[in-house]
Amino acid sequence: MVTPTSRPGPRPLNLAATLLTAAVALYIGLVALGNITDFGTNQQFVQHVLAMDTTFKDDDLMWRAISNKGLQNAAYLAIIVWETVAALVLTAGTWFWVRRDHGLARRLSTYGLLMLVLLFGAGFMAIGGEWFAMWQSKTWNGLDAATRVLVLTGIALVVVQLSERSAEESGETGETEEVK
Image (cartoon, rainbow, N blue to C red; front, side):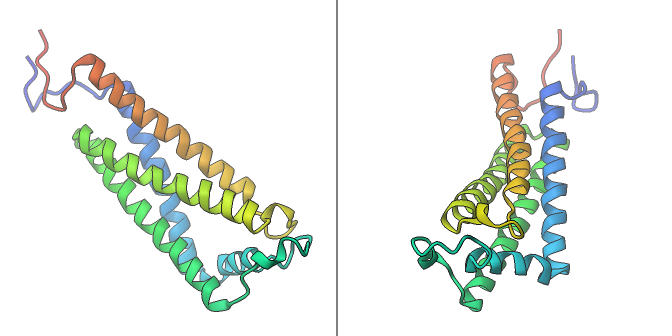
């Protein structure tokens, strides 16, 4: 019999979900911290992408450009807030993985990871890359970095979801199991 003080070690998928959630939380937390403490560097990135000033300047696309500094800064602040909240949610998810509250850990991890899918997939790749033609810029093109984050986030999201399926198939309820 397993008692609350003699729980077996974590299942491999839960361990993988824990470590991947922690890795993504650390990464995005460092990104947010960098954006806060070195505000100007990526502020320039966002300003150039939105202004489309390093693209091919095709007249058919340039109407999309946003050159208003206030709107550019609001977009950058929204990105920083989004990253910070995602980092906090993923950190909480990691905490609950470690505490073996797998249901809450899965939910928080899923929410945090989906926040990053939206930011890097919809925000940077779709809106920045396509709408603002970031792919045309040799200087201010963040598509490779966004792709790397999206791949890591996607892998983590798949593992988190697989850990839930594994728990359901094994009859794990999140409670301490009895071993015979």
